[in-house]
Length: 71
Image 1 (cartoon, rainbow, N blue to C red):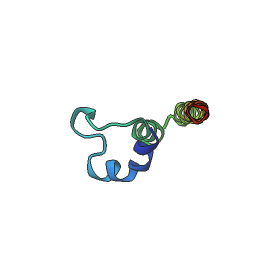
Image 2 (cartoon, one colour):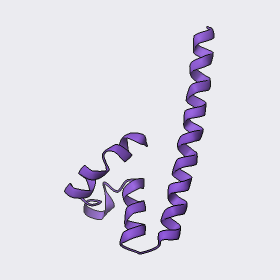
Image 3 (spheres, one colour):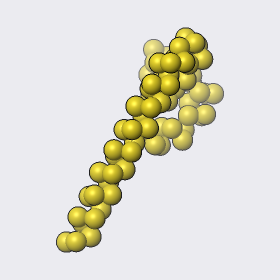
Image 4 (spheres, helix red, strand yellow):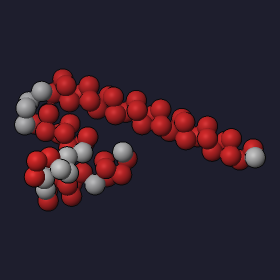
């Protein structure tokens, strides 16, 4: 998910979601929601969900790293 966020500009400029949304990522979908549909509240909620999901993944990753260091 972090990698798709870093590739946002390339996806937006080259394909903009591609044919039939084949290359539509979460961040690109959030951008379309905000600036094409003008639904800033929904896009803000999507951004908050992405933030909390990444925090959860970071915590789980750190816990797994600590367990592997103990072994």
